[in-house]
Length: 228
Length: 228
DNA sequence: AAATATTTTTAGGCAAACCTAAAAAAATTC
DNA sequence: GAATTTTTTTAGGTTTGCCTAAAAATATTT
Ligand SMILES: [Mn+2]
Ligand SMILES: [Mn+2]
Ligand SMILES: [Mn+2]
Ligand SMILES: [Mn+2]
Image 1 (cartoon, rainbow over the protein chains, first blue to last red):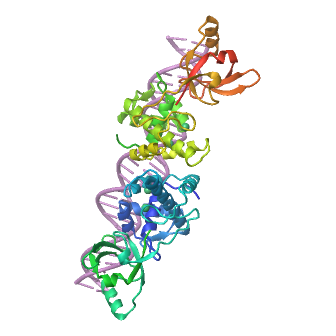
Image 2: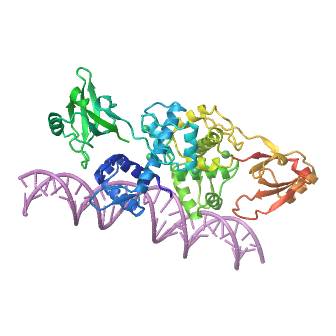
Image 3: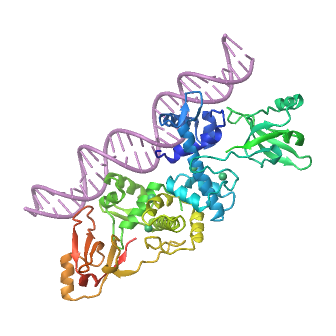
């Protein structure tokens, strides 16, 4: 595998994070994620396409190729191992590790990362609970939990609904929740254990991100997997 | 202190390494050190001058300003701490650490480096025996040794001659060795403990780098300090 | 001190990664 | 399905860091 610039790596990682199962990623989404302009994204997509890291057709979004996915997992592996090192060994606090790892992840020596992994005792999760890909890019799929058990602000993808009654489906339809819907819990009200959640609209960058409410009963029947 | 690019940092560090006591550094020297072209060096010197990191006058070489020196010591601190980490904790071999540290040194979080320093137990020397600057940029001046005790290929600066007789000075003059001469020992012959040394010509980039021979008797009377 | 050789700078260009503004395509609304 | 809005791309520009070739300054020889 060749060597990629910091910028290319940041794009690849961002696409990986935005892209889920099915998903193609849009120009505006990626621009928002990377705090850059849509025109810059288009430039970069053309380049990444010639390097065969993404599938891209003008005006129709893009997704990682197999090589692109492999690369993304390498970068995520680096990132999370460094986060673990910073928290575990250097006693950085939980919230500080990300920013520093954002730079360290671009040091590309494979030997460095594999030795670091060994030194740390092959940790399986980073300080945020996200799984660390192994040497072969294998990543533990994070467990599925019901919405009640989801940490606040943890983006997750709906993957299971335990009650499939007509009434339940009616409610889900109304709330615009379906299999594959990506959401995060923004607040938990202790009075009645109701949740305030935000649904991430696919193919809409900054569209109606308004929060909706979920009763405890409903939340216990919706299961989701943490997004990476 | 502001943030500098990887390229700027590499230039600053290279100037520091080439510049000794007195010394101004020349365009060709720096170009050779950085494996770049003289024209690129001139471009960068103009920029570093406007940033007040070097004193530079066209056609008359350059040297680091006080700020430039401070920055150089920060980068060298990072570099050597990472080398120590790689060798000591990750069990990298002696010769492997440099290349990796060359990248890690550009991750600029001060907190990262200070915590790393603490984690490593405030080491005073890197795996090559070079001193590690402390948090304030203070660096231990490396000890002076006679040429016999100098490790092979360790660039050093002549700083003392114990025998000052006419005969000795005549010989030194002939061999073109003087106070401040920079040299390195290339071979040691076990038969008679004579040394083959190379003298680095100041203000001449790739000039007559031919090796000369030094008898054991002479070598024991010449003292030098490791260069950084 | 002239002539010659070497070193350094200038001039002009290129690639990467950004940007703004305008044009084109796609999606949405009427 | 036509009009409007939104998204995406194109066109053209900037900065950084590099390059080659030519010109200018300095150093060395003769
Ligand atoms: Mn990054
Ligand atoms: Mn993390
Ligand atoms: Mn470096
Ligand atoms: Mn070293």
